[in-house]
Length: 112
Image 1 (cartoon, one colour):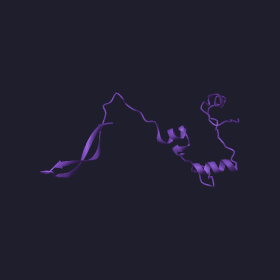
Image 2 (cartoon, one colour):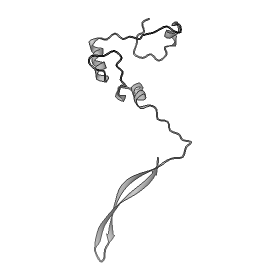
Image 3 (cartoon, one colour):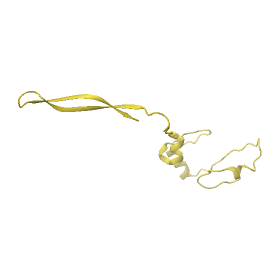
Image 4 (cartoon, helix red, strand yellow):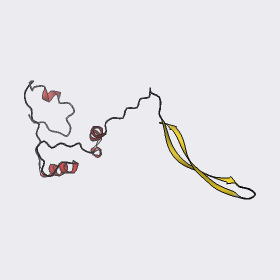
């Protein structure tokens, strides 16, 4: 059976005729252009049998989902308090016509 195209989202129609227990080996015809693309995403130049990789997230939404997973925001749970450090600087009065520059580092809380 020959399947063509870029993405195979639903394989039910293609796999349905295959009975249970039958060994299926997917294959891919490799030309020079495809070999360069495979090397770019992380395979070795030799293309060893059984070599596997996880493509980087830069190749599209499906690769990004496979590499990083999905972020689930739980709006029903309480927010966490996160702290960031900020340097505060001010001029403090130090007598007649005189000021001193003061500064300190403070932790500023925020809900995240």
